[in-house]
Image (cartoon, rainbow, N blue to C red; front, side, top):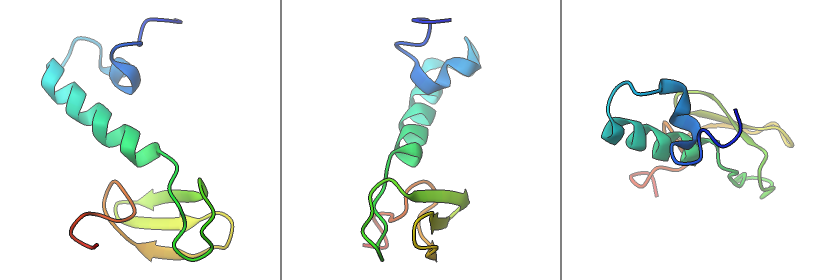
Length: 78
């Protein structure tokens, strides 16, 4: 299955369903959510993990905090 999702990326699992605009929006959100983020307490990069909607935890120092739904710090919180 190599090379089959080069254009669609992470949304290749949807196939031809839901329309290209919706899939591109989902791709943008999910790639931002899974990108490495920096812990606000210990400043280690790539150690934050999303537990559920708005709940983030650092795998290194154990710090758990509430943030944005898809990224640790939403533009409204800053």
